[in-house]
Image (cartoon, one colour):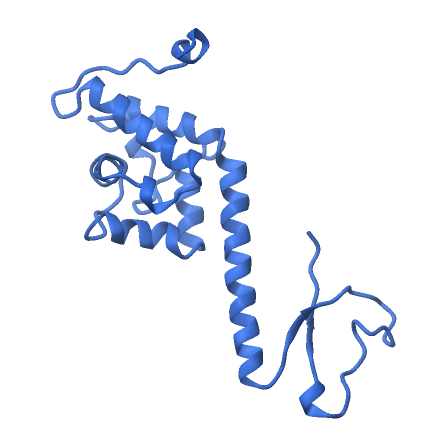
Length: 184
């Protein structure tokens, strides 16, 4: 490890329920989880236990349940989790609605370090989850359209009503299409 990385390592204090050595392992587990784009195989028991016990999350029955609730189906809960750990946000708990976890009697120094570590990954993770959410929604839209004999296709929005992108579909119901466009 080079000296630049070493100098950026937070100083943790030993606590009765959470020694500094364990805090360093938890922070390392979080960094791995973030660096690998929130993949389930990197969501360790150590990280899950800390989140459940010291970051104002309920247990969600087990590690798999916690992962499924926040990351398996990107959406509102994923955004709340990201907001909690985004240092550009106020740090409001996704589940309790306050910032007490940042000043808790156990692990507050680690919790603040976790937010600092997450900051460098936020833009990439927000984009990753937004893209996954969009793909899920478009897949659902395509399935619903297919149920009614329709198709969802990309289309360029055009103000000309005779443009193929916005022209009325053919009278033949089998050839009718729903058209979608978005910027981005």
